[in-house]
Image 1 (cartoon, rainbow, N blue to C red):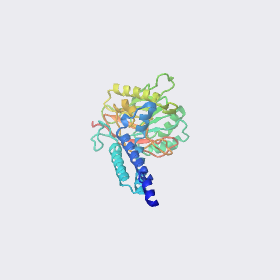
Image 2: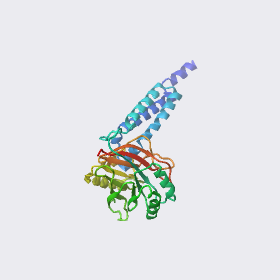
Image 3: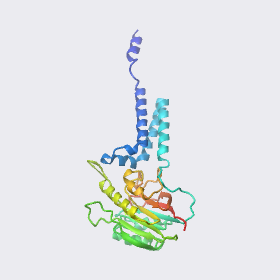
Image 4: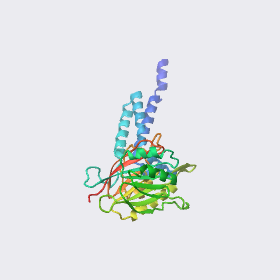
Length: 329
């Protein structure tokens, strides 16, 4: 009789395992919705920008769901994990670029472009240069290059890349002649003229007309009491987008530390003009344990057919090397 009473008292209570299963299914649903609807996440306090910057990392929910399905022996949680995997793959592999030219065979020449935020405290420019030169680049675009570092990298890169142009804290070394160099003002409103992080130069590539290269370094994002401080960066993004839109060069390249991922909606003024190879991995920052790729090579009128990080240097960023397919002559 007591057993019957106990059973009756517990009959209406949900089992703890069932509650845990529902929590995991809810987590899967939220993850799938974030992946599919990240563009609708409000950007208050930089939240939308943050979600899109770290979008691939939402896949870390999958191992948790799989472990939960195994431990609870729950078919429902297993199905939820499969759904999240399918959505993650659809959204992130590959991360699509509307209007991007296809990767593959190309009739024109190839240009190997290396981009690196070398850090203004870099104590090993020779070692850093060795990592960059190992990629056999045609062009190297560096940011956070102080005047002493410009001289040091000039010595280290000059034999392989004899042509150089610098402006403020950005500099370009090239295997091909550089012409039409001029500064690009990307300063957010209220910032002093000493903030000088933009350079536009023409690389006289073998094809007709050469390639117009923008070497840039956009403002960093800071975390404060109001959330992510993205205002200065976004204002510089808008300025860069306007410069690119007004530039009629048939081949246009952007190489720089943009301080955000290509998936970030804030970068739209730039990605409306130039595109790159989006990928799940290939992170560049922080160098010790990279979690996001904020260093980029983008193009218009040419195809960025591959992009990958290089080895560790004395910087807190990893360099990236991109192969750019130029249009046929």
